[in-house]
Every structure is written in C-alpha cells, then in structure tokens.
Image (cartoon, rainbow, N blue to C red; front, side, top):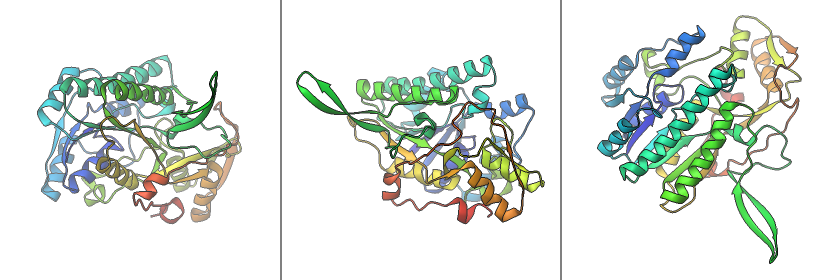
Length: 360
C-alpha cells in the first residue's frame, strides 16, 4: 500500500514510517520539523541523539534498500501542497501524527494554548478537507488519545468510542449509540475531543473513511527498526513538558534521585509500548472501514497502572527511593480506569508488558 505519514519525524511517526517501509509499503513522510524547534524553545533535547531527517532517511536506504520520500511543509497551513501531494501520490492511507502531542506544553501559557488549538484543529480539518478536495479514496488513520474519556471513575468498562444510551421519547424508550462523552483535562486533550466531531461530520457528510485510535501513554524508545543503527534511534524525552511519568521515573532512578510521585500516586493511566503502536497502525491499515461505515474507533492501549505502582515497579528493579509530593495538578487523587481493547487483541496483537520488558 501507499501511505503518507504526517508528522513522520516525531516520536510515534518515525518508528511507524520505518516499520511500514520494512513491511513493503510505499511511505512518504510529511513533517515541518516543529518538534525539533520546540526542543530549541524549551532548551532541552532528547536523551538519545536525533540525527537530521535527511541523514535518517539515507541511513534507512543504506540498511534496508527501501526509499522513504520526505516533504517539508506544515499541515494545517500549506493546504494546496497537501492537496497536490494526495493527488500525485494517490495514497491508500494517510496516517496522521502531525499534532502537538504534549498536555503540559499545551497548558504553559495563553500562547501555547493558542498554538496547540491552531496547529491541531487546522491540521485535522485540512487533512479531511484535502481528502475530499483531491477526490481520492483514502483511509485516514488518526492517532488520538485515551485522555478524551477523562480520568474520572466511570464505574464501567470504557467502550471503544461509542456508548449505548436509552432515550425517553413520546413514543416510548429508544436506544441509540453516541460518541462516549468527552472529559478533557488539558487543551491538548480538548483538541483531540474536537477531532472526534470533525471526523463524525466528514464521515457523515463526505463519506470519508476514518479510523481514530485512542492511544494510551507510550513507553519504550526503540523498535526493531530504529535499533538497526544508532543514527535511526528514536526520541527519549524526560523533560517536564514532553517526558512521560515513566521516562521521568527512569531518569530519576538512573541518577539515584528519589522518584517524585505527586499526591497519593493513585492516578491510573493506560499504557502501550512503541513497538505495539506500529503493529496497531498496521492492523488499522489492513482493516479499513468500508465506504459509508461510521468512524472506526479503537482503544490503542494494552495495560493500565497506577502511578505509585509504576514507581514501585522501578524501585524493586533498581533500588531507587520514592518521594511523595503535593500534587500541583487539578485532578482526582485516585481513579479507576477499566478500558475495553478487545478488538486489537482479537486481531492478534500480542503486547509487550511493562512488567516483563521495562528493564530491557
């Protein structure tokens, strides 16, 4: 298949571009390299050295014999370039990673809030409008987030995107399926919630084929492909904006600094390994919805853990100490998170787990 990977230079996009290329797909990356610019803004960098995109692609060609094309422009701004690329390439799928992905970064200031909204919402609307404008039958695969559901205790297993509800009408009770109500906790999560409404509209109005993947927190750095050469290595972010709680704990343990757990550590979150993301994207690519079918929503996560249990897991493996601090965030001290992910497991996904693979 032909696939355009939007945001293909980033933490999730790069390993997916290599994985799909290795599987024999024709891959084109579109990226404006903004994630690299944010490193300069924040005066931080990935723990793993990230080579220039041109060098990355040349090394991949040397090692695999496969070409990956690269286009440098901004999705959400350079609309006509996007339409022309879709017309020229006639892709089977567009995999959309080109959104500002960090909740803390989206909340730093009014400017960061505005940037996140402008970037994320204009990008997804332009992708959908361009698919319609180009007149090409394209399957749009979007990387969403489990955070659209919120992190309260629902008292039920969170379904994959849709919720059955009963409605009282003058003719009696009827049953419908609606999008699961969103409860975003940041501007970033708010944009992902809005994405769902754009998908529903373009799917209903223009019959665009869409798969929306509600993803958990990603752990791990390397995949089989990025591990082939140090010049292909993936990002390891550990700063306060883009570094995940797991990466922060690992770095604190490595330098013998107490792992900082905010509040009780009772916050429960969903997780997935970066290699499993690649496999999920391939599953989605090979199982597109048919024209006229509603938006396909899958929960792209493989396990859930409380934050304090993550700290204990790392402590037992490394001997690192744990420090409990006051929580600066406005969030529940404790929450349950019971999530349905039956469909990916049904498609044959055999996930890597934190307990078995964290210290690899």
